[in-house]
Image 1: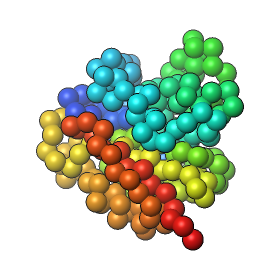
Image 2 (image 1 turned 90 degrees about the horizontal axis):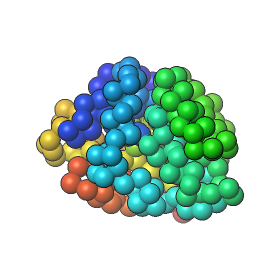
Image 3 (image 1 turned 90 degrees about the vertical axis):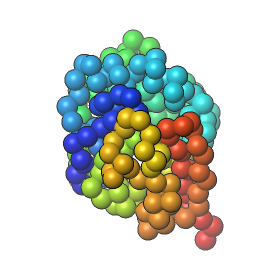
Image 4 (image 1 turned 180 degrees about the vertical axis):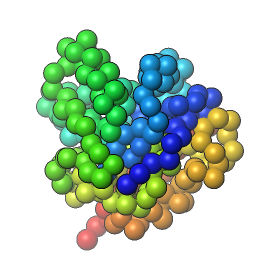
Amino acid sequence: MTTRDHAHEPGRQGAGHGDHAGHGGHGDHAGHGGHAGHGRIERLLSDERARSMPPDATLRLAGVTPGMMVVDLGCGPGFLTIPARHIVGPSGRVIAVDVQPEMLDHLRGRLAAAAIDDVEVILATDEHVPVADGVADVVLCALVLHEVDDPAGFLAGCARLAKRDGIVAVIEIHHEDVPGGPPVAHRISAPAILDLAGRAGLNRHEVVRLNEDRVLVRLGRGAD
């Protein structure tokens, strides 16, 4: 699975969330498109970004609660990773996955500075995410889906990682022509996400508008 070489958030070039911010895929692909320069990392962790998408509130809307196992696909420098660890607490677990070693190195430094030693940091490839099937209560996929060349396959990879009753939480930029962000032609609307999710067996959903720029789609498997 490959990604387009663009990664933008509204008003900030080179950001996505992924931390997700400008991540390339995950699920069997995870990372950022483009090179992880210092300026880009600063944008991904900026106060402006935190104000526009408060990490704690975003994670709770995604379904993250104490004691959960969370896989942060396309974690970048950890915009959501470290707040997720604080929410799940010592009885939970967080796995952070990305395809860019520079992003993971920066995340490791931030984890060390915060005296957090129980987040598992994993380097993936475009073809494979080395995480076991069915482990996650929540799989985070923030501002990644619009970058992958095979979004249906990507969501199938996310579904692989989730428990039977788990959540795949997708955050994307609204399909409307909001300022900044990726070209409108590369954005994925909430209805399109639901269509792609259905092909991956994720037919339970809830759509939440995070702010004027971003939408959160919580996906899961329906009852048997």
